[in-house]
Image (spheres, rainbow, N blue to C red):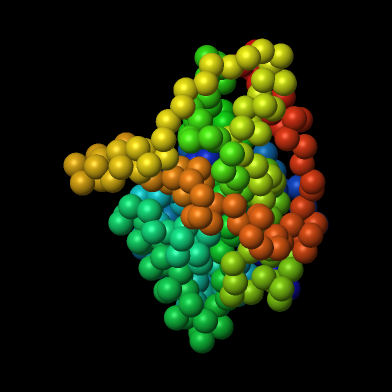
Length: 300
């Protein structure tokens, strides 16, 4: 039984949603958070905070007695997870959830366009698999892009303030995506089903839809027509690859990551291609119009 959980990377885009999901089930879990600066973090609930300098001694102190470690570290810290895994094994942790939370890394079609800097994520997965013999189990959550964050930040290609949409090709390519709150719940439910989710990829999604579907929902909710700018998937991929050659990762990564969702045959629509774990995890069925309306409310 998994009861004591340590969350690494509780800030950022995803971490708060994971913490909140655990705090919503207080009778099931004891939650701790690992941070470099305990003074900069406050949580609305019974959360124990461990401060670390990422030395083995401080990590071992935080992980001792923990049943599971959930990593939601940012991209730049993904490589540090090998040290977290090593210490987790020493501490006798049962389950490690790495900071994956995105595309389907088990599908070669989903990874072929990823920039080389993403190789570290695949290395972490291999590292976990190689250490199954120690008794440490793992779960990787495949979520697609974070739907609400992606819309509000503009990362999905929609400008909520200007009411503009960037549509790739015909806009009909379907991809799977998950809201932050559902990702958080999926983490909790994964640990509540330890046997069924051990040493495998766990596939969840709030929606499997197209850019056209999102645009339609936005126009319906705002009761207005949006400006549409069209682009070619082929051109976006070429531009992303050129940016990569030029060393411009800030331009390359968004283009090449989106290409995995917005162009066909790359596995972004895993919700169409395989059975999701939503039912196993008893995740809520979400309504696209309701989610979009909530996101538009502050921008209206």
